[in-house]
Image (spheres, rainbow, N blue to C red):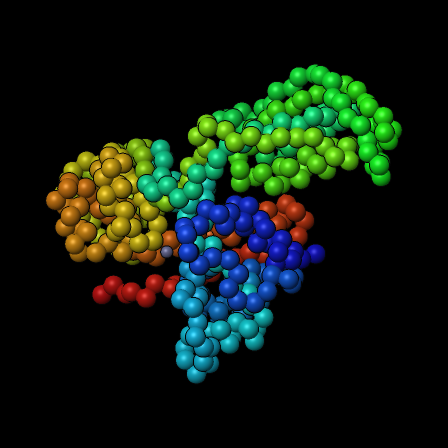
Length: 371
Ligand SMILES: [Zn+2]
């Protein structure tokens, strides 16, 4: 059996949730529909004409791309223009396009973590926070018979994580009172009679982003018609997610040796560097795509070298003056997302028992050639 588009993208969004995207970023479904079977999905960095041809040749029903195909609102789809023909081809061949951009960059285990990992950076945090997930406390009152079922349901849905511990909760025994009103169908007791029931008060912690599925799981596992529960906001700091990563290098090196390592690890034809090639770099930051704007963030993070694409002349001069070395592997270094995303989705689909294939695009989309 093949998975539906909604199922495939559901997996994608569990990994790179939409709320992690930078404000006004263009993400999500951009062409076609997810309400269909997906036999094959192609993961690409950009949706170019050549990539669409690749999707057609491979028999793909869906392209999962990093860069949006529609960034500015379209005024027309004129199929006599190159851009218009790409849309025409996609629609005629029933190929949907879904975009995961900054949400994939920010995601835990996503673009920036992949890059940090392959460059040997032991990540200590992000360069620019994008989202803080506040913590909440859930308190629910359950009769003894369903205590374990409710606990397990909320844990499975993502409640009860504290640091490296899971299944965290606290329970205390007490007495619940209630009187079923007219038209009720109580699990315990009878209409119009005050009941006193032995119940457990179960408390657990959850991130706000998971509130909806956790409350749903709790309600499904709870035997009462009208379960009593409370949700409290907490002052404790929630998890911060953001763009870029910084930290110590597993193996300090000269800038030159590090730059060559970057070139090899990200499989790019060349890198540009700023700074003395012989200086030793011990701490590094990385940000996939265009990171010129984050040069100051890298300086604040106290790194020796910042790896990012699309560095412009004046940013390079400012970095040099500030003593921050730069390595620019080009925007195309983000190519790493193709194999990584495809591998992850393919494994999850196979584990769910679907025949849907996910393959990385092998068409190069970097418009630059090196002479
Ligand atoms: Zn990019």
